[in-house]
Image (cartoon, rainbow, N blue to C red; front, side):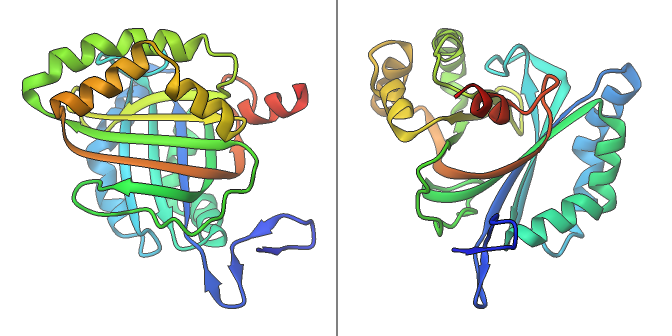
Length: 252
């Protein structure tokens, strides 16, 4: 790992380029801004397709509450991007016109920089993440993405509220949200935990989450699945008036 003069990690070392993933969340308060954000789920695609530095990207909506419901939340959207390295990500996010428009139209935005430590599965038929980062020992982010089979939609969404209640009351989780590309059929869960121990304890704990995982394995609910874990490399912006991870660090 290399560092700049401020001791911040740079993931371009001696000619070696290490992939970085970003997830940017945007909150839109006014009716006009929400209509704009909804329209951009279609219109923004041409702009992202022109960004040659992007290796992979997805435009996502969210569900109501913390996102773990099938009812769309027209106020919150997310953009997931995969970049060849962190400097490229920072440069493009800070200067590309499409990101500038999202920034200006939104009332609040928060971007998380991530380095993939492990991944299995595929997303839209591709393998977008490269597990090139060694686990750093700090906060860890988990992302699961699935295409749900139409025949089990009702079964799947019947279990989600109970899982949401459990993760929502878990004192360890630092941030969590449910997003997706297509309502009902595509589900992405994203959460950040202080360490691997707390995340593993939640995953193994008997209850709605463990029961849902077993049901997925027994019933083959998904047409496509992807599971990834990341180091949290940094954040920019705020969510609900503060940086969720910085607040946790201050209270540690």
